Length: 442
Image (tube, rainbow, N blue to C red; front, side, top):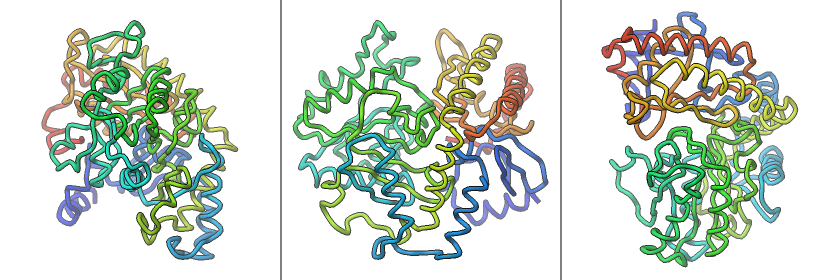
């Protein structure tokens, strides 16, 4: 059955919407586990790219969605207000960091949330430029891709007006420095280099990821965000915080920027906001989101079913104290991963915060030559033995670990034991190149 469905998928779905790591066909999901169409069970360390923070089919989410479906399957928020979507907007304003003079715009994905920001910034500020970071992933629409800074994005036309600067990637510092003696020199390049070629008075915003996820699960020094906030304040620039992948408890706080003392002017959220139902949001000053009516609207955005799922998701994160669980289990996993790294030379760096963890694989720990092929093999072999993983990074060499936040310590240890055995098999050459040929990943 697996081969049949894969062949049908290949014949009917375009490759531009695919990123595949192994030949798996999912049949169902529950909690922290997936089952394929043959009934094989897998422990999930990916959560559908950090989407299933509350786990799969959480009873409260199912209940909320079922209740809403019985009332109305669709209300177009573009033309008709409804209580569920309004309640979610109010809740987002309440729980996100920032002043209360804000409003919300709903979308369908993180990409269109960042596209909305990119579209409205010049209208609102009268400034035409944005600063973003190398390695950033802000989306796959034209506007959000222009804000991104991955190598693969260079294959597509850039709409312009975006200048990129190095992220605080301490393991591979663009400036060849070491933290903390560097004094986070990478931040200074914004003023010392970028603002020499781009007039800061024409910069509308600096957009950040508090943790650069698809860029390699890079956690910057704690002071980094605050330093950027001060630059923004000095030049009248807005700070945009992209929490699409790291929000809603993943890092151990409801939002990753709350690990710092800085607050953003604009926040974008998506992915886990509705436990897998298509929804995103921009939270920003009301003057910005009211500036040009009917400028960024989608017929099904803010659908009450998705909003009901989002309200229930936030309730679960809060009531089940999933932020605290992310800290506890994340610390346990990071400690164990560092222990595993001591006996496996493929692992060059272990990093992360809460339950977004990254293992950067290298061929040589001194030269730090990326081990992209070996990374693909680790993910493939882990899948063969019952563990779901994916990989990210500018060099496709970072194993990403983003399990559901409901993960228990016992489940975490089970997955880590599979992962440790997988490293041994890959290092011993037991996973052939042929197996990963069809699965390029990123």
